[in-house]
Image (cartoon, rainbow, N blue to C red; front, side):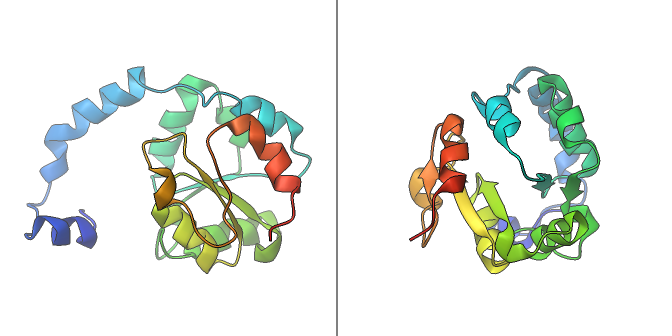
Length: 165
């Protein structure tokens, strides 16, 4: 199913199953185009708090994305999909569900996001947003109040310890 925003941008509804012809291309991109973000494993190793992964993707897609980069074990049992809640990002539901499942109050959560929808969901959930611009998303799309934007994952542990102004 195509998100309504996509259909709005196109100015027309898409045919059912429109995406099926693109699935082989998507699968190939996942098979050959994924790499661990430089500095991510080191940043995860420094965390002394619970962490999880919350994505608008399906559980199968998330797992398929984590496998080739060797991160399945790091997130085992702590992966949350938009399919688990009524509304995905930019609604706060996914992040609130993840926090509740992890037993952490939303105001004590920090979220690293790569998309404007994710940053909006983080803010709506009352959580601390960190915009990672090492993705195709432009830096200005992640900026906002009390949202540090960074492009080097090795900076994350330091940023997490800094008070927001």
